[in-house]
Length: 403
Image (cartoon, rainbow, N blue to C red; front, side, top):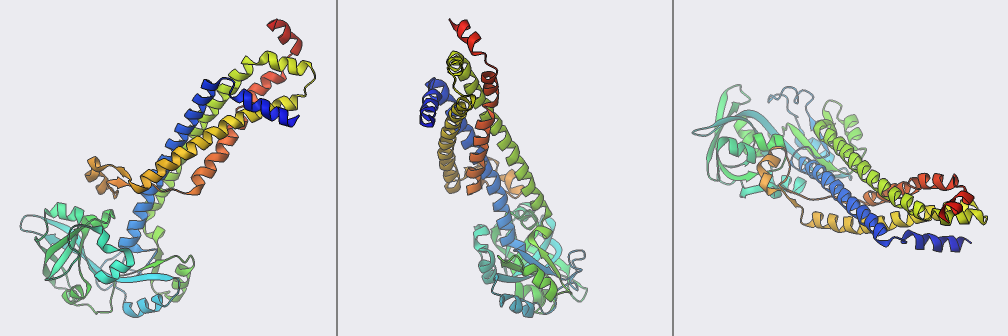
């Protein structure tokens, strides 16, 4: 009996072939677009998080407790080299860098802007976050009193490769001093704050200019996969401020939550379309075969078997729609992962908000599993109304009406 019900359900699901195929195509197109949008949304956030970690905070950053509120030279970490060596000895640590930064004024012959000069070691930064990949123009070099400049700051000052910039700030003795640098490269990290204000110079040269100790740093940034390292460091360095990436970048955390909301809204809209599509097909299908169901009830077929048949018909349509959508969605995500979505026409606007002009999609298994269960649920829910119609059916009246 069940084999017969399965065969009837399969044949009846395609009784009106064009109508069924239309619903399957609708499910497939809607699902593939939803998966692509989810991948793009998540790819945007993941890219921003990754570049912020590589260019600045890592997963964990350590500061003097007073530095983030009052960025003066005296609020630096003393003995930073020793602390760095101790942290590097931990097996869960991938990379550690020390940086020294101070706020001041960057000037050219015609323009000036408040900025931050950051002393870095290029070799360490390359190991920490592949710093050379942030290069937009020029070369990654500090040769001949060279410096690197953030892309937005370069626009503000209207400088190019080879331009001279004067940076003025207060040194450790309290005197106002200035240093001249020659721009060797323009970097774009998509970290909005750094791109708009950062002037990078050699760490040792900056220490000499400011008159601070060689083992001092304003930041110790750490790359790690360990979930417990922050707690360990907080216990070990109680006199220092140990912050996680999300604590330092609450806006990115909020952006992640917003993308979850956007994805949920998109998901809900698509599932509603799927539900309405399958409901329409099933309801019309039941109305077309109302006499058939009346005869089946009249000859004594149990309602549960008819219910099973209708449910299987809906599941066949939903499952085939899911398979088609999964294939199209997978191809779309693979394309967007490899080639990305080119938004170069709006590059300037996107870069000012920290986005790349080419956005690459992210893909994960949960996109497909969540959609599968949602479509199956929508298929099951879509048969309630048609089943209600059949349950209230009076077989004798239906047969008489059709004769």
